[in-house]
Image (tube, protein in one colour):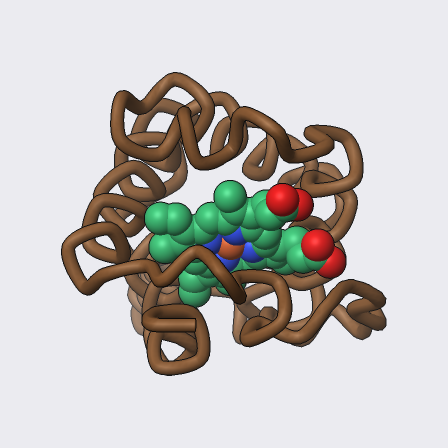
Length: 137
Ligand code: HEM
């Protein structure tokens, strides 16, 4: 019987440290991704390097596509209906440095919006493989 409280505490500790398996859930589902994309878009537009690149982009359209894309790559089951990454960034000839600036701005936005560092890392790890399709197009 004395083992019961110990077991209960162990169970509590396991629940407290477990993380949602799906990145989509860790991001807070559709609501969390909406909040995330609002923060990302605001940060990109305000950034001195990225801002001018986004000046002519349709902000609402961009945000809608980014929400779909983040939902899709975080296993939320959405269909991404936008351009391929090569097409979306073609003619921009983005450099490695610009890509790094984009990653840094994404981190700032996620920190400001209170996404835990572990969740930030999980999302950035899924964006990183797209780098080769985005730069030098
Ligand atoms: C893994 C990294 C990236 C992802 C996932 C991403 C995602 C996207 C998406 C979903 C779109 C909209 C596609 C469409 O029009 O259908 C887009 C457009 C755009 N991206 Fe990215 N992007 C990435 C990296 C970058 C970087 C590094 C920059 C700049 C330094 C950038 C600048 C832009 C701009 C300016 C547009 C708007 C183009 C326009 O509509 O005129 N992106 N991106």
